[in-house]
Image (cartoon, rainbow, N blue to C red):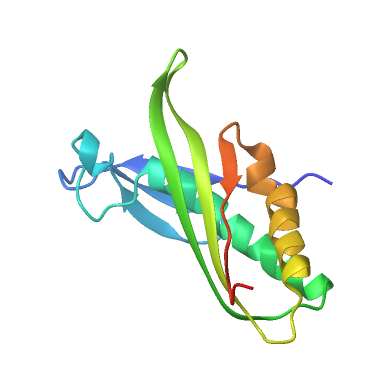
Length: 144
């Protein structure tokens, strides 16, 4: 079964905005280039959206994986960092670091949670669709 996801971009006459994107889900926002390339502070940009799409998908996939494994976490926070580099092919995000900060509940098995973190990376639709290297760097508490 195929699914389609559509977005519509309109350019803006407003100098503070490059354009507006509206997505199937009803979400819309203005966007610009990243600040380091002359863009406007506080605006969505394609680079942040690219890295952010992986963060959203990974966290959703992890939650589903934890539920299937009947595991619960005391706390979860995910930091992502995309590295934009010049390559022979031109500029591209070559690597994205996923840094899940996980606090275990006393009863949870650390090895099972580590397995869930890996499975989420492997099964995340966005990570499977990206050419970028994706590094998982979990920070799990309490540490043995």
